[in-house]
Image (cartoon, rainbow over the protein chains, first blue to last red):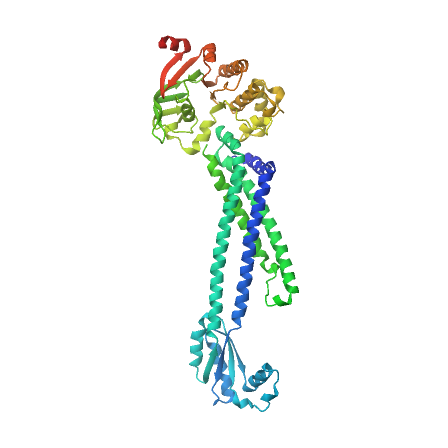
Length: 295
Length: 229
């Protein structure tokens, strides 16, 4: 392809967008709709993932210190606990603090007034890095001399881990299906545009235009439509997401849910939308035109 | 030059469209190709333009061997063969000038060349005063002239006209044939596929008759007539 043709081909690509205004409009609408759906689902699943992760972080192991040990001995065990691989943080809670927390948890009930701290044991609140390994870490804790007992909500931690992996799988499956559906819809829309121009393509072939020469304007057109669609979808996603967060913030019952601000997702979203727009635009037009090249 | 040597073309269903066609058209010749519907005329055109490959035999067109031509060479073969169809195949939303210029642009011609060549070709076919018209605003004869201009603009060595007068009245048909003869006089090989026996007789040119996928006669129309007798 000669360099002096590039300008003409690019111009033809852009001209095609306006020349076939309705089909271009339809392609952009389909791209926007598909990308908004895919984008919304991706953001939702990302937020759900973070929420589950946060909830999972609240799972911890309570390690009780042997009551025979002195205060100093009890405190020294912390070093050994913190050395364990999966331990993120081990916090010492003295029996006095434990009693205070207990009474506070029961709204300072006077029934506990006579209870002495000696009835309780010193303890460690152990937060883990990976809750799926809670059982192994629990066993390691039990083997540390001076640890008399442990208490851990294995089922809860396991539940969260299962929810997270199911969520991951479902998200990937749904996003993949939505992307394939988007590509098919866009490819079909571009095909309709091509069908509209089949005579033009046939004439180009007849007078000796090369396949590359015929393809390029359509690919430029597909690329432009894809990118315009992606930009619009990105804007809609941003505005929609911000509006949703603001709405949720106003509803007390929904305060449990915390959503990541869009600014935090800006770069990955820009990259994803641009890549998706580029992909559906170029692949959509490239594959659609193939059928019309066999003239 | 167009050369067919013992060409057989069978379709998937097994029926033979061409069954041992041998013919040769020299550079600068004017030839009529005649025959009833289904005789194999369209297959010959498709073989010449590289739309089909022969099942057996050899086809040479303007230096290209069609039986072993590569896909990427076909556009370059087509630049040597201008094709004119019965139904004109013009782009309705382009003007006369744009329709012709389009054929140059898509083969990568420079704008300067286009500006020089298009008016010359339009003058040759007598459409110089209608450059800004759209095909829909023109008569059938004018549309066919435009189609001829488009076929000519890339300066092919051969023009193939497939039933060029099929949609025209006798007077316009004569004009189109006269124009094709004028183009031939300028050195371009012209192959006209037609049913119009009156035009074949009137223009008194070499005529290849084909029937059932075989060449049944080849020569001047009157010689063919004598052979038939």
